[in-house]
Amino acid sequence: MHELSITQSILNIAVSSAQKEHAKKVNKITIVLGEMTDFIPQYIQEYYNIVSKGTIAENAELVFKKAPAIARCLDCGHDTHLKDYKFICENCASQNLKIISGKEFFVETIDID
Image: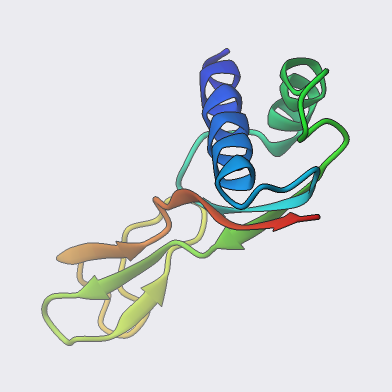
């Protein structure tokens, strides 16, 4: 259910940005979503269809871009794509990792008329 508040924030950002530009309509919103977040794009879309009704962002296309879960090994320096939440360096099998990507969640672009 936390998708509802996030979706409302996405709508607020889009509408506010469009109004600053004196836009009449929001056509598309691109959202970057890290692999390690627990947000579900389908739920965001469903909530968006509800909360955007009657706004200049109604019917805007939501585009979700996945940000891969990447960790840097603090022992060998290798960047590892984390799969299935296995926090092990692909290069040296160390578990001494620092997350550098995959927790992102932000509005990247807003296409307006």
